[in-house]
Image (tube, rainbow, N blue to C red):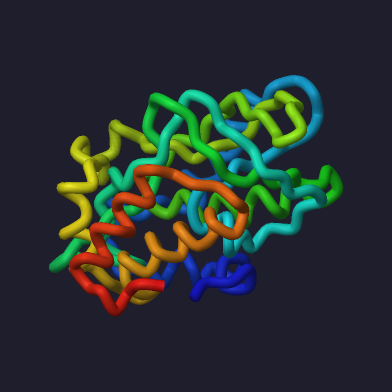
Amino acid sequence: MFTRETINSGAYLGSFDLPKDVVWTQGQIDASLAETMRARPAGGEVWVFAYGSLMWNPLLNFDRREIATLHGWRRSFCLRMIAGRGSPEVPGRMLALEAGGSTHGVALRLAAGTLEDELRVLWIREMVTGSYLPTWAPLTLADGTETAAIAFVANTARPQYERDSSVATVASIIAAASGSFGSNADYVLALECALSECALADEYIEALAAALRRRAPSAAR
């Protein structure tokens, strides 16, 4: 499993056995971060919306964590994955956000004093292949506070994007895929567990987890 140390040392980027034209360089990652921060809304605070593995393994130092709802975006396993939890021979699917609906998850507020370091860790982790488009999206915290957060949404212009992310399509793909980070199915089940621990639910994730259990009953938790 990757850690802050592997990210900061460069070992994380070097660990993916991917074609050179797929992996982003550090320069491309830095440029994406700079572009995103130029679009930063006025107001000072920087929140990151966690909707997948950032919920249970954030690897970030933050000074506030709140249940939150992101507006205008929904969870979708719409990114083809050939490393991490998939392979070139048996690709998996990676979670992203697609336009439409809303998503319940966790908001992480990054402290101003360590903002640059934390964003660098986050961008290296998420932007290995440029499959995401970091976006400032409207967010409502559990107490009703409205703000904006960085959300990693699907970059539909990248070749990794797959239009059909329905449960009927992706369940068999995810059930078969695995890689150096573990099985693709374990990711779905871990997300279902993380949502439950936050007293949250997502119909799409629940349906996908149920489909995976029907294929492999021993995976039930």
